[in-house]
Image (cartoon, rainbow, N blue to C red; front, side):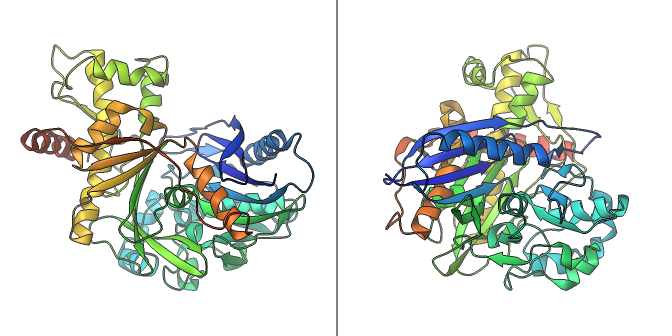
Length: 472
């Protein structure tokens, strides 16, 4: 038996899995890492902890596997999270600035007159959510007296796992930095100067996602993608027009637009889907900052629940929210608003509002935010989204999935693979080295069709829009 080793380095933790010759994940290991919130709007990780955890989960899944039985490995990563590390030692020089972090907001305001240029070159709205502003803020406030590298988690892990022999990123991650041209797929010198980021500190190579990124303990690293892109690939969304949503800490909604980038006029991002088989595919994308993170807030800060798994039953205990809406703009709003100044609002409560109404409002906020992005996609493409592929923790919540189908309105198809990001990057690695001849799709677990009356849907969406206005 030969295997593929797949890594999913996410916002909350790190997973490793082994895919067998049939493309199935047969063994898994995972470790969480700490989250740090040193100031309002700031979110940090310890990149050294992430690297150590990556090695530990690899060791765990490879225990008992014969040497030479692993044909290749793939790495998927939380995307815009930014690391600055010592080029000689590989060790981080400061905390990693997480994708949710908006400390670069003031810098973006300084550069606002150049926002159109940034959007034209990168396909991305000028925003502190992207690594350019994050790295620029760190460099303005820290002096590093050593040769340093700047990169996203993928390039950092590749650098560490190859012991500094390879400093590379893939096209999907590079397209999310706000430092690379969406069509040239190369670092843009004008943007580097604009953000005052040394070009020589960035990855030496931007490779296709299925390229070889060196090797770790003799195992070739033959796939690297951002986690959302890996799940897009894992869903089999390899053709133009196919859409997926990943429900994690935040949500990533992606539409494959084929070999031509589509510039959004409705607050979405244009990114690279992946480079695969010699071809680059593009996506329209909207990122929701708080999805499962909203439910974690209910648990950890409000203490309305003791376990996120309680949410579905509590929310289902009431037929609706009685007009309560929660806009979870704890660190601003992502797509399609890109408003880092927005702040969370719990709106519409009355004397009869109970815990269940607030919990249901939190759950509905996930579906509403995703529906906002899907509406923007429909406006950009001139056609409604009628079918959505879903994965991630939220996709096992039947109430949430029905709400999502109702608010699109359209079909929601849920995969039975709980680790689709790991599955997707593992599939690409396996195809790249010839272990798999073709992509092996995962099985469908459930399909949800819209049942909500159109009048009710319109009312709910209008009330949600009113709550969003109040948050801004």
